[in-house]
Length: 410
Image (cartoon, rainbow, N blue to C red; front, side, top):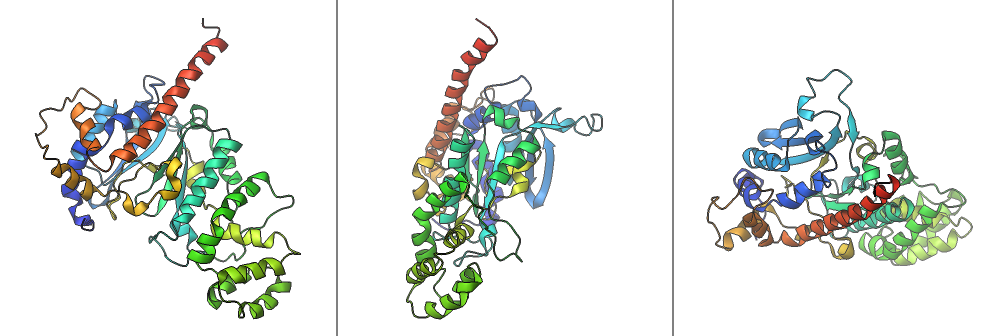
């Protein structure tokens, strides 16, 4: 398959939105079981159109109306915002101060560019199979904490389409969290602190918090293969001087001299651990600085913050922003994610081009489109999404009788 050409996007998007985008499951997600009659209507959508035209505060009466608008405007990017007190499209007409963001999924945005100070292989928007392990680590560490420490059930992890991952926490109670609660959660999950000028960004307290200990257990599984072999963080003087800047000054000079006698990163790491025995936390702090998740705090704490929608097309890579199967996390390959040009080509190959007459505009998703995306390599990713929705549906049904019992509604 030829590389994606960003110039082809205007020609490909109409077909993608008309026949491939999984509107049925997508609309089902954002309705949340139709929790209230105007819940969907109060949700903000933002479109980035051709020539970087940015349109905020859009809202729609139904998922079908959103579908028609996406097919009409063919946005280059779709962002999802909060559920507001009023319909977002009316934000200029309501009394000042009355228009307020009321709830939204708790979201996390993890971007590979935030690891540039510890990556050897890539910089900026570049990624490769070596550094993608950082995203695997981030998902494993954050997801474990969400489930075991916070008691959260419904998390949707999504590949951004280029260089990072997003998480949508969709539990009903969490969607109602205040900015204060969101800030507290992301602060709990944050360990690496300080800007470019900060050399030592991880300082462990005593005793070490259980969350950090659990995270270290995850890091240990990957550290040798990722950091010592793949990134070769102690492979040459320039790279190992960065690591030595993180060890206690009293052993730094000794290590610098003895590192020259060792052949590779693995041998140097064993020496470092031996020489820092008196400072038991030093190796752990290095491991965490090089491997621990780096969250965009502002994305998580703001209720009204927008985040890129699942199944958007990345305009630079052409890759689809797809859900990640946590059961197959270690084998997830961002370079195997289908591009829009690949999907359109696959659809053309089916030979099923009978026009639009079979589409029923009154349905959330026609049987025709239901078949269309299942004929492409997007199908396995939609299946992951549908499994996530089924788990949410099952949970809602289990919760409903409990709520009735509490209300004495027999």
